Amino acid sequence: MKTLTPLVVAMAVAAFAAVAAQQQSSKGWTQPRTPDGQPDLQGIWTNYTSTPFEVPDEGDRPDFYAGDVDGTGRGTGPSSFLTDTSDRKLAKARSLVVDPPSGRVPIMPWAEEARNYRLTHIQDDWVNFTPWERCITRGVPGGIFPAGYGSGYQILQGAGYVAIVYEMIHEARMIPIDGRPHLGSSFRLWNGDSRGRWEGNTLVVDITGYNDKGTVATNVATQRVRAIPQSEQLHAVERFTRVDENTIDYEVTIEDPKVFTSSWKVAMPLHREPDYQLFEYACHEGNRAVPNTLSAGRAKDREARAASSR
Amino acid sequence: MQNWLKGAAIALVSIGGTIAVSQMLRSPVEGRAPDVNALRTADGKPDLNGIWQAVGSANWNLLDHQARSGPVLELGAVLAVPAGLSVVEGNEIPYQPWAAAKQKENYENWLSRDPEVKCYLPGIPRATYMPHPFQILQTASNDILMSYEYASANRVIKMGKTEPPPVDTWMGQSAGHWEGDTLVVDVTGLNDQTWFDRAGNFHSEALHVVERFTPMSPDVLDYQATIEDPKVFTRSWKIQMPLYRRQEKRAQLLEFKCVEFVEELMYGDLRKKTGKEPKFSAARLRWP
Image (cartoon, rainbow over all chains, first blue to last red; front, side):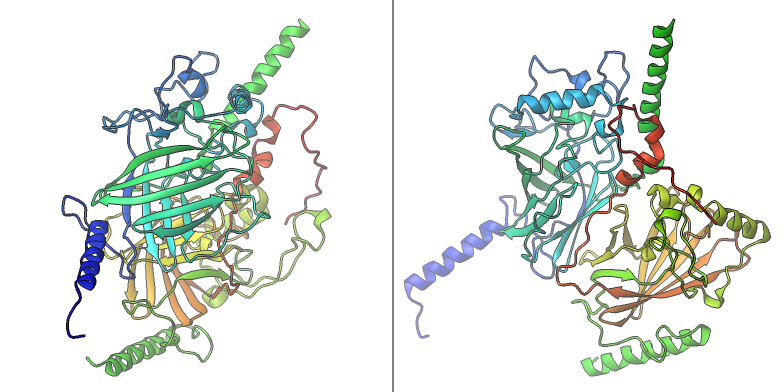
């Protein structure tokens, strides 16, 4: 080629500008990449925040949602326990739920009733606990909602996979990014079936194939949404975008036409904390909460029987 | 160094290493040196990425064991114990006398004592040869993830120098380094709650495990683990077995969240009876 036409030059400049804009934030930070060219999300991340999950409402019953169903302080404890007391708040959000704009999750009434039944009957049967208290899983995406402790996540990237190691409850989520299809409807999993892909610098993870035994959120910090059931129609789409050296913007859109009247979205940052140490959260191995709670229920039954026979 | 020269040097080091190892114990796979043509990552390390599984019955018993009836009469041939050759060098675990007695007692009380029955974390080395696959993910950041299908157990192997473990745990702390084509993992900080198998072989919190993963071909790893625990054994001892790559095109780890399968066993007598719960007939147990 003897001369560059102005059009070619203009296209090249535009393409370069687009790439530069994609790779460089306004502060001059450049998106690091793995040797095979993926945006590099690796490292240890935490999700501390004391921004409430939903925008509070006068009708909310925070202690009830936390499991203190009779106002005695029993159950999982008052809502002030096991929530984040750090001073980190999101500067520009009233709540982690950003859509609908009200900041309130559009829960169907039957699902709130199902939650109320669960919370008031944990002394009857372990299935009324959330899968977190049963030490099965905090769920996907529930496992990444702030819980106040056990808040470490390690992201690792290698051949065809992004892996997320959850400190609580010791899970390594293997997300294939090789374009393979979902498992199919014969699989109904607690955490669904994750499939990832890159859209620009954003890792997009599509999750389907859930069972209907779990709950969409498990921990006290999620307040009204804690212990809300999930159906087999649950579908979540997560987006992980690293926006600077120390921050991943995390978003998840959740739809479940059996449980919610519309889809809803959570947005929150993950903070890079290289010195944070993930500890083993051996949950089931030390689970006294479930047997002690059931045992208390049976003791109450015996008292009631004794009282009625007097 | 030119590439052919480098390759030849690696081959020589590998072969040298193999000869040295084979003088100490039987060669990893009879008559075969580690395969220098095994897959490699971009930085030239053996590529261990993939889904692996031990085949055999080491999880039933690390030592030579004959087939025998299982613990539940009604299950007949199902869940009867398969026979297996020892994976322990010399077919002997060098217990101190008190510990040999305790192992025997553990064996006799297998169902009430084996942490696997309760879906507890398997520890190392047992995680490797549970009858479930596990996935290895090598990363550019250097850490190596091992994710086990059983009970969602996992460990991140930190490559290079690490601080001593701050506390004992079920899965311990794993520090890795490469010796030629072998991934060597030094595991410390293990608690005394896990077992080696379903035969009551056990250890204390003084357990120290050094594992060696060596590719024999793109689809076979030689796995060795040296086990020392001065509170329980009179000397260190060694296990060795092959790990095979799962070949299915769609191979992936699935969920084996077994807590759900043991709740009835562990908490069933504490459940409020409604008359709708599943009926269980009294199983006729016989063990040992």
